[in-house]
Image 1 (cartoon, protein in one colour):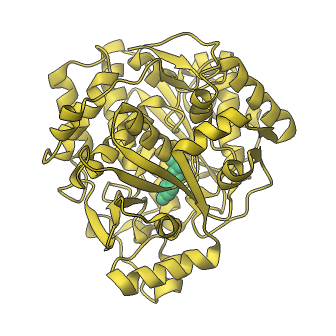
Image 2: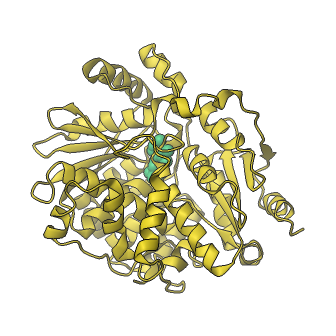
Length: 463
Ligand SMILES: *Cc1c(COP(=O)(O)O)cnc(C)c1O
């Protein structure tokens, strides 16, 4: 199983190499050279399996010989043992043909746990074999950071640094990052927005001397192993509603395009997905891009669904790569345009290819609140604001094909927005009820590459 860069000019790697490398050295993202197929019978045979057994069957074809079969089964069992629901990803019904896939029962209450717990186990196993020590640096709009810290806290061969935009994450999100006591955890509040955080992380990866000195590894959704781990729940939910004998559609609250790209891979593997609907909040660059053909940044406005306050959706590059006929030079050209002018035009053929798979919609702030209120009244389900964006957009795409909207976070992670919409202040699950009482540890950092690199070198004992 070989992985190639979307910009066509980085070494070809195996699964383990792509996982440990994160961002390719040509600035691109790793994708499989060809996507393994699951036959109809293989998909049908997933019916009734546990979540863990589904993980094994869906991910196994992508791994090559990186892990032995028994070893991989153990990693999966450990990854999902800390989830607060036996089904891992339970589904509830919102309407006649509309379902909600609850992806918020992991240790930090957002869907990020599904992939981060897996990548934590897989990286740990790979490092134990190589004896290597690595430095993880990640950018977060809130949920990736806490999920990463939860997955890597206390490991002896890993330091984990998380950059989050100062003042722009919810209190629960912040506390989940700042309260772990382990010395290898470093929460950094950056003076800037999420795109600044993500840009500084990419800068560190592109600074090869620094990258090699600290053994830089990435766990943002630019990391293929994370996207792959998320492919699983598309199969789990699709099969529960009758696939492969019946088609399904998905609506995905989208920021960095990682989660919905996992759905795209599930479709490429053979899951009969009719439509993948991109749901954005008022930061709607992806919706505008699909509608107009112009991917144009125009500033991020804070919203009540902060984990989607993003402009540069990194994983969109993976979909573009396919839409451009896997022409890495063409992708690199568009990304250069984006860097120099803040925009690029999607060529007509590629735009058509994207529209064949993806639909899109946007949900404003008032609509988000109104959807939380109305969904509670109609179904008893309390949505987080991100999930509400999904439910709102999905309503415009309901048809005879079952629609599955992804619920990406637990309402208790965003209690202020939920309380304003419903009068109910959602409680944290008992296993984390003391979160508000634990002391916090955080470092305020400037939006400056040199300052950040110096801090990482010092904290890892290299300067
Ligand atoms: C990260 C996140 C999203 C966006 O997912 P992407 O993979 O970045 O598109 C949506 N909702 C929540 C709660 C998140 O944490």
